[in-house]
Amino acid sequence: MWSGRRGSLRPAGCGLEELRRRRREREAVLRKARREQQLISKRLLRDDAPGEAEEGCVAMILREAEIQQFLRLAQRGTEEKERERALVSLRRGLQHPETQQTFIWLEGSMRTLVGLLTSNQALLQLEAARCLHELSHSEQSAVAEACLPATSYLLTYLSGHSSDFIELCLYTLGNLIVESEAVRRQLLPQGIVPALAACIQSPHLTVLEALGYALSQLLQAKEAPEKIIPSVLASTLPQHMLRLLQPGPKLNLGVAMEFAWCLHYITCSQVNNDLLITHGALSTLGLLLLDLAGAVQRTEDAGLELLACPVLRCLSNLLTEAAVEAVGGQMQLRDERVVAALFILLEFFLWKQPSLLPEGLWLLNNLTANSPSFCTSLLSLDLIQPLLQLLPVSNVVSLLVLTVLCNIAEKGPAYCQHLWPGPLLPSLLDTLAFSDTEVVGQSLELLQLLFLYQPEAAQAFLQQSGLQALERHEETQLQDRVHALQQIALHT
Image 1 (cartoon, helix red, strand yellow):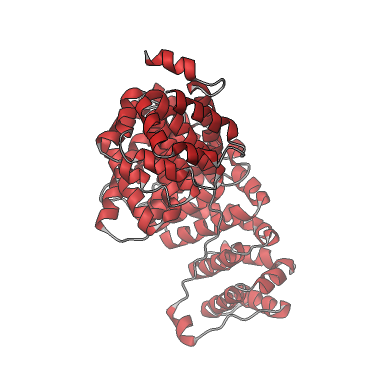
Image 2 (cartoon, rainbow, N blue to C red):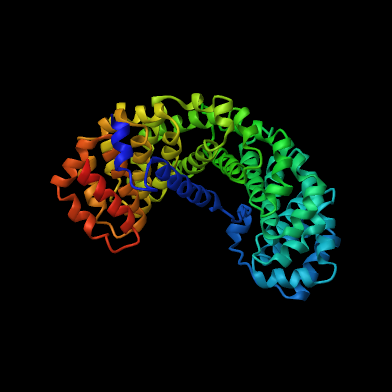
């Protein structure tokens, strides 16, 4: 009976198939937006010796003659302490961009520094590596490229025994990677991916965190999808990354954060997300989501949102893959606990980090888009009202909330019965007053679905001055959709 009514009243081009087509197009745009945000940055380790701090040493800009003198003393000084002090002075000078530029254009300077890096005296090696680290933090690609002669040695030292030295080498490599394509071109054939894969089995948390940083820098390169990510996926790195993201007493926030961002960059590339799914990425990230929801209820730790963001993005990206259905990926997340956990995080974001609300709502959208069971969970947990309370936050948040509600309404009459009567209709009348065209358009789409499946809602809409709310959009780009909705409301 209802299908006949729907067919007779449906305006041309505005039926369910048309609504679905529009939403698919819009979701493709939103999905791209979720993928394009990255975190290119550099990190600087400065852990001056206590003696230096007590002496109140001030970093000075070094002239060419002073750089030459310090290098000469470091190379040929009569005492090891004298040589070490010379390198400390050079390192402090290299904190200035002016000294960095002078250093890289000084003939033989880098050759001398690399020679000290490869010496058999540990303290000189360490100070030489610290000098390279200062250079790696430069924002000038010419400085990074001047460090090219040192990269093969930095990679070699990743297999050493000193965790502090390995950590320093990893952060230095990470800084160099992000600054110059020439550096990346050299590091790939030198074996940076196998070297990083070997490091990930380190028992030292500081090494693992530094490794995650270096890898995330590598994965953000513009050539990563073609030249880097395939090699990473072919290594043992993905399995170990997922192991380090498993919830439990051994989970470390800093380490997990770095590798969650690594997974985010991999999933954004869409090179081979099927592989991550078969390795159990959905299950691991789903459990981590539950763990995060529990953690935000127990602590005020402001760092938790930095882990929640990439976890939400990874899950959202993976849920768009065809392989999810093939391997029963949805079944790995088909649990009311996931929906409940997501709403705990949404509440946390609302009060602590509103900018992350779209991340949680995008995941909720992907969960409900093709899954009646997740829509059922949302209804059975009585979460429509909390969802509607997010509408006033921002236009972006409103659009995603309305998209999730459309996902539910699209599932048919049984689902629409849970949406009306209730607070939905008054909320939609409010969103029709918004100035944002996308929000209003999504509101019209939701109203159309509701009227098609729940005719009584159309009558209630008319009684609550719904036609007057629509009239303000009659002369806008939404006029065709407004007229179509008016006709449905009047003839239902």
